[in-house]
Each structure stands twice: as C-alpha cells, then as structure tokens.
Image (cartoon, rainbow, N blue to C red; front, side, top):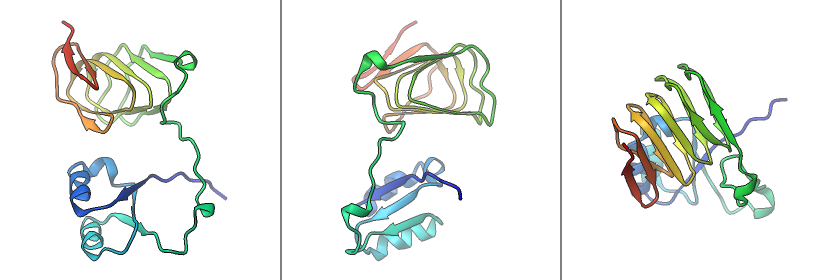
Length: 170
C-alpha cells in the first residue's frame, strides 16, 4: 500500500479556469474540483488533458478529512525556523519546507523550491520558486517566482517583494 498526496483546485467558473490555464505547467499534475456538472468547463479541462472530479450530492462533510498541510502559514512566529543553503541548488532538486529559507548560491533552472514561509536568494535564481510567506528577497531573478499566487517580475537588482509591493535594495 502506498500513500499519496494530491492537490485539488476548486473551480467555480470558466473564467477562473482560463486564468489558471495560463500557468498550466504549474498545475498540470493537480486535480480540479467541480461542485456541479458543467459541460463547458469539462470540455475545456479535457481539451488540456487535465484531471478533474465532480462532487455529487452523495458526498458528505463526514467523508472529507481536512488536515493541515505543510504549506499553511505558521500562526506563531516564534516557532518559525530558518534553513540556510550555502550551496548551488542543482537542476532536478526539489525542496519543500515550512521554514524560512535562505540561499547564498545560485538556484539552477529545473530546481523547485516551495515554502509556506519567506525566501531570501542572494545569488541568481533560474528555477521555480513558490513562496506563500510574508516576503521574498531576490538578487537576480531569471526564473519563475510565484509569491502568494502571483508571478513576480524578473529583476537584476537585489529586490524585496511584499504584499504591499516591491522595493529595490541596491
């Protein structure tokens, strides 16, 4: 027996789905959840070869077990920990953490970093970064950084990104 985790995205409209489809490589392995049968949305999902579920009236809340995922934000900032990577992150490496992450060397294309906390990158990023924390600091971004669901712009200068905007630090 193997235990697997799946990611499910609830879709309520075709417009929402079309926004998600623009970033298809990030979501191609996820499942999509429809609350009711919708032929238009189903046709669109099938055209992109995406997997989906339709919730019918037989599903009850007792059947759904909700657990905290490692990517939910910490409520106690004192318990938050920091992990420092003082090495190059190679292509194919995947780091998934709930810690504040600091990278002092390059993150290569093909590497994937995901955290529910903050990320600081003091060299070049060419990989995929998914950060759901309060801020991202990056020196040079040539890759893709998704910060709280939004893709950040490319930058050649040390830049701080927060929910309130960005600030160039050098």
